Length: 142
Image (cartoon, rainbow, N blue to C red; front, side, top):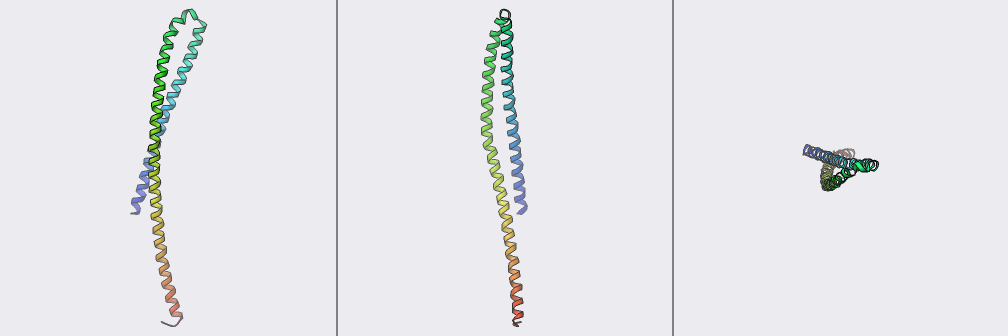
């Protein structure tokens, strides 16, 4: 029985660690998406500078670039929102895994305390028996 609880606690900790690792990967994907968005914004700034320096030559090309950027920005925003939604849902799974681990740890701790209390009770009974025997001998009853 004792080994069962220790195994259960270990399994729940492992499951929690796996969930946390997965959450870390999801957060990394989100961070990469924000990096892509920042790079896109920087590209827009750079392209605007070039277009401002050469308005006659680049003007017609900038319009196509700008519409592509708008579409890319919208796609990135959608992917970011989707990833944030996944992360929020997965955080609930991590919380559930943490709760399950804590429940197993508390059950194990209660089991250990119950065993210790039982051992203490038996030891006290033995000491009481020894004390009673000693008292009866001292009284001359035996």
